[in-house]
Image 1 (cartoon, one colour):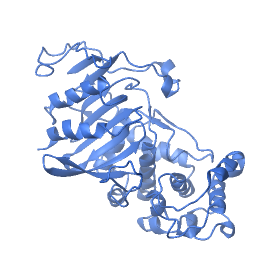
Image 2 (cartoon, helix red, strand yellow):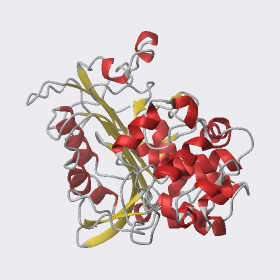
Image 3 (cartoon, one colour):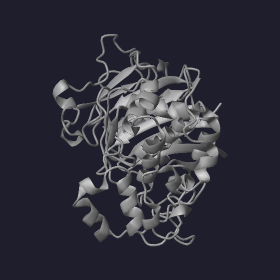
Image 4 (cartoon, helix red, strand yellow):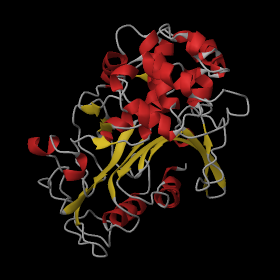
Length: 401
């Protein structure tokens, strides 16, 4: 095992053990080197922000087999520039690019690099923030694969799947909202903050589809002009309401049994929305290795262990650049698909398309299909836009063949 323990002291990185050829040389790591940091049973019950910060960063270029459904390999031997990746990991541990908690890489189906910093633990679920939206898109894809929806249904009125709605009370144009529009943040709702706060005061009155009823009664008219990209705006919960309506049982059981369970993901936190439905846009926690499984599912065109879990045609569309995000801080080249981002990454004069689920604080599941590469990064950084440039510069070139 090629493992490193680095003290997490800003601007001071102490190398305790290293393998030959890295950080100025040295002897191979002792086989008795500590494994990846694990959280205690007590820490598992804490809120994520209460998990203590690690004294040392953990960097592993030959991750351990944990019988979790991931195949392991060795950075360098199985692809990648070991020295460059370790350099970046050392800099992350030093806090040079912000506050990050884990960074993992798979190449050609093998986990070849794993690292944990600060609040990162190999066995504790990490906050996903808005990366949850990308997970929700995969859940909808599973419903398509099982025949509860079809690709044609993506362009049909969303209200047609919600049998409990009283359509006579809905605003004009409610039928213009489709799954495609909601998945691309183009639902077109206009519900004031004041109205939303009023609805929150009586949660029993907005359970299940009553939540969608309340939104569509109180929104302004849904017009072609209104249906432009607007991040959030209840769109993820519109999608979750449809999932709950079309699958057998509940959306919560469907997520557990037909999506996460299929990937061997059992230790996670998925909180409920005020409507009683599972959250669709945030308030989910998942382990870094399990986040990688979602990326591998996308990379492998919806297959897991030979079973088609999500239609390849749906994933191709979901991870395409369908609309241009309008946030003024968004990189100009970024596009948005079905709750997944799409961007070209330039490496040595060539360009590689990347798809990624992205959540505030630095949560990312990154898929670079042409390089057979998936990466996961988690963090709690307010300015989480600098790390991608470092990954492009110091990680991707080593995997270009």
